[in-house]
Picture 1 (spheres, each protein chain N blue to C red):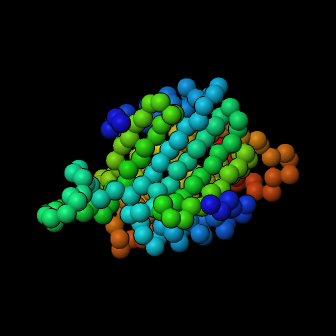
Picture 2: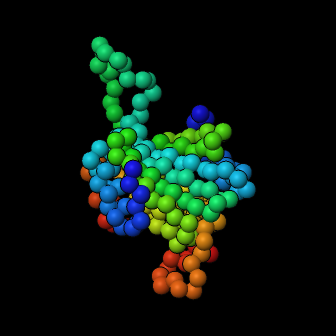
Picture 3: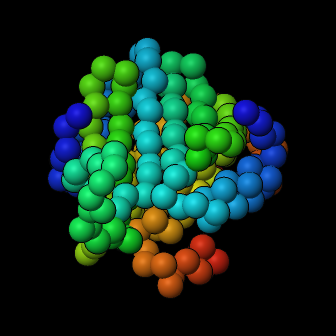
Length: 86
Length: 110
């Protein structure tokens, strides 16, 4: 279960995992206000990618990425290029 | 698992975040959904089922209470924006970086 330290690497690996099989992949966000940390996990039940942070500046990145993935899921197949338009 | 309409889901999600401010975690799960309402049969009949392509399932829990909603079809962009704003507004307990912040635009959450 690789923990990523670099955000860029994490997003690249996560996108790749999702595009390989969109139906199998799920994205889990875990937020603990009392401990002040946020964790995002992308998994297809075989591979699991994890990124943890306690920095406020990462919240925006994580939330944006989460929205991008949602867009990918909701858009029709032919519009998977929606990733780049952000 | 309570399946809600999108607006109600956002309200309940806000409540979950508020409840967990002093202790506990909020878990949010996002998954692509093809619209099935029946389980996949173990063998035998091939289901006469048209998988939908443009839906996703959003679930949230605090460990006890569970809520969920399906995002699809019309107005998904507005809902997505509302949802993003909600997340950003509620996930504000993290450490802020001291004046060394180089990205001016990433401080825009205030």
